[in-house]
Amino acid sequence: MAKKRVVLTFPPELTEIPLTYHLVKDFDLAINILKAKITPGEEGKLVLELSNGSLEKIEDGLDYLEKHGVTIQPLSKEIVLDEEKCINCGACTAVCNSKALSMDADARLVFNKESCIVCELCVSACPMRVIKVMF
Ligand code: SF4
Ligand code: SF4
Image (cartoon, rainbow, N blue to C red):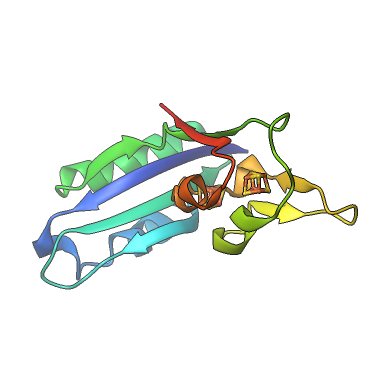
């Protein structure tokens, strides 16, 4: 299964057009919305994970969006955690809405990178400053 994570920026005139619906219907893409900030009449932002059996289908869907004026950037930032310096206090898990950060049964921090949407909320929540954003 091919997968791609992208950040879409919609100009105000596109925020009310169901472009993601077309990605599903016309390009047969499975869409996981990781983050959305869409206000009618203002610029909108969506962080999506697109998947399909073929990477070509994903690229076709993204071409379609670009032709309609959507700006597309790969989700290239990532969160890096220095586990050696982590004191397993759990403070970061309280702000991680996507549950990428959680505590295991032994009260140790677990980071599931796949679920991370790079919202960066955990970076300032960590008292030890061991969580960083890498570009
Ligand atoms: S950046 Fe931090 S708080 Fe945000 S989803 Fe990733 S791990 Fe969770
Ligand atoms: S807030 Fe920092 S020190 Fe505390 S569990 Fe999270 S990464 Fe570790």
